[in-house]
Image (cartoon, rainbow, N blue to C red):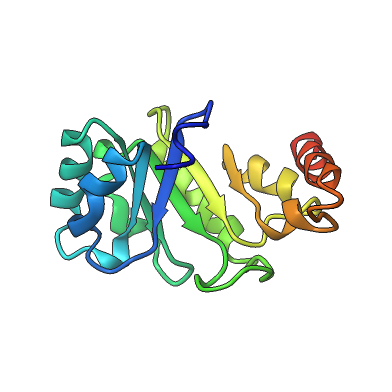
Length: 168
């Protein structure tokens, strides 16, 4: 909520939690414009996606590295975004799992011309950003790559890292 008062861009919220349905309204009220839930955490994914849309938010579904894109076939038409976890969720600084590149390309083919974003979260670096976009991603989540070398005394490093990723 505190961030939403200062944000100039829509807030994209990734709920890596069990039973996200209990919290959807709270995140929308706090300023979320996009709410992404995990396929693996939702008992009734279609119901959850419809609840997100009913709140006036865009809906996304995240899939973990072991989850095939085929699980999205019946829900894809209802989505605005698919988030491919390219590392196992849990902590920052992990290396991208190479098999996720093929998953991104397969997902892009499944989506076709529909206006559905593919977001990648995990292990995004200067070395793989271009390949991720070439495979079909159009949004990259980068934590360690952005914060590398920066500090409260050296915040300029953050901007330089973001510019370098965008150029890659």
